[in-house]
Amino acid sequence: MRIGIVFPGQGSQSAGMGRALHDALPECREVFEAADAALGEPLSRLIFEGPDEDLALTANTQPAILTVSVAAWRALSRRGVEPSFVAGHSLGEYSALVAAGALSFPDAVRLVRRRGTYMQQAVPQGVGAMAAIIGLAAEAVAEACAEAADGEIVSVANLNSPEQTVIAGHAGAVRRASEACLKKGARRALPLPVSAPFHCALMDPARQRLATDIARAPMRNARCPVVTNADATPASIASDLADALVRQVTSPVRWVETVRRLAFEGTDLLIEAGPGRVLSGLVRRTSPEMKCAAVESPETLEAALAVAGVN
Image (cartoon, rainbow, N blue to C red; front, top):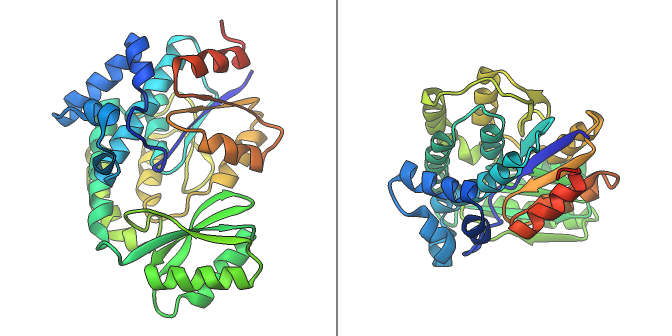
């Protein structure tokens, strides 16, 4: 069986996530302890106990989700699950690189802490916004963004499924583009409760700062191909992976193409490792024939292993 492991991005956080894995499995507990050591602070306590308003800060959310995701991956790996491909949605690409052996977990934790900080600082609170457009083709969403920009920035940020495209940019431009999408036939245009407009040109200051940090982080060739956000194609060479990681800060997350590429490569099963099941839902809307499983607790781990045929 050809297995792909996919990792969630920001938006799946809640206090207590990963606690069951931590308490039940020593290999998962080691991941949380390694995160605390890498940052020099008790991140695990924040993950387990909150408060939610602190956990929701981008600089905390990103290392928290990475930690829970890698813990879930370690549980799978310890039981013999070997992926043919890995991929991650936005932030999840860092988890994918750890799983592929291209980036050490401590380096990844430190990078995503800086990534979250840089993203938050790139755009003053309230200046940017994001919205999910439901029921309109991505091409029409892009047209609406071009028509509504009026000298400001608004563009496609996440191509999540054939029915869901997220836009990002200046708050006024996002509002105008949302109205234009509704006029073009979108069923809904939902403002998203985010702290910054991710994956658009407004993130360029964050991209430039993060590029320096990524260049300093030891990146290795991947043990298995990583389907990157920026290109939606498999990559394994360290320099290519680092370049894609920099470009994804301002590039759209091409998740529809990523899922279709995984299907094209003959993937039989996709396992979502980390908090929530958002990606599993998006996969089913994009490739309904693809088998999916999710791992965020000892119980879901056993269920995923059964689907994968691993005893």
